[in-house]
Length: 390
Ligand SMILES: *Cc1c(COP(=O)(O)O)cnc(C)c1O
Picture 1 (cartoon, rainbow, N blue to C red):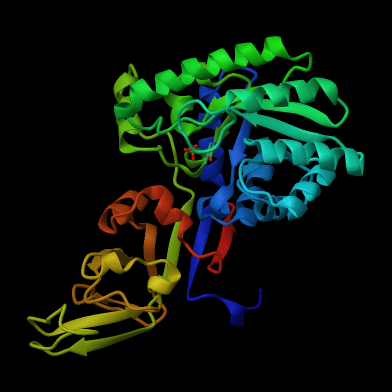
Picture 2 (picture 1 turned 90 degrees about the vertical axis):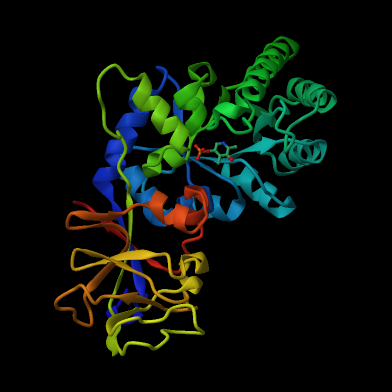
């Protein structure tokens, strides 16, 4: 990309942080379980192309996505062809495409089951399916009757339907408040797995149930395959899971994960504001004394939430300074009076480290009333991502 096309802010991705996170995940994994890297939501905002490139460099070769467009992006990344599992949406044309490409996908209703068989027979290539079982989340999942139909079709058409997996998804394993519901789901799933294995001559290549929180909290959910999203990006699924991890360890420990993402911009302008004047739109910020204000070219159109009006913090020259006034569409203003010298072009850290200071994603998401998952995935695809190899 030529210099002229640079966006007003950019995201840096740390290759070494990813290596640390992957080592942690692998250390917690039951021997033999396959690790699927979940890269839906533009790799949780990290940038699907860049993140998959980085992951492949670390030897990851299984990726899970929500939709066909995401699968396509994963497939575009140069290098060895990875295994791709599509967990959500596929229309008819995309279903055919997935079968042609040999990607596996979730089957959670009768329509998709019957279409898979019909398409596979028509194009003469097998459909690789994961039977997703309804166990209590009440989102997507096969009911008993459709499961029976699926099992009989798997036996009738072993050339057209390949049984890649039997799986379910837990409804909030990151919160202890959901303990009873999760346990019930797990027991329900165990029963269905046992039933399905007896009822069908074909055997599933993998049984799977765990997301990040389940992998940490419920080792019995590891089975043959885990689907890990948030942990690989360096975040515990919730504060609770982090505290539990620390509390259960025998020795004092630090956070074993490293954040991969930093979000940076540059000072666009600075100006003095006399005492007694309002700053920016409306009257939400009054300068009680003469202050120096810096303008940063990042606003809500770039994913900087309006909730951070008069609340946000950024780092400039090692100082933590406050956002004052409203977050605009393309700009924020910060009070830089405490910084002795400041210049147009100075680095501004919106998320990440500068010197001794850090703006963490979690503090950022608390201020803006979002969870980590939401904040990250809302970072626009258009912001330039840079892979930092050191
Ligand atoms: C998003 C997702 C995951 C990964 O969840 P994390 O909490 O990020 O690990 C796993 N399975 C399914 C079905 C998902 O949709």
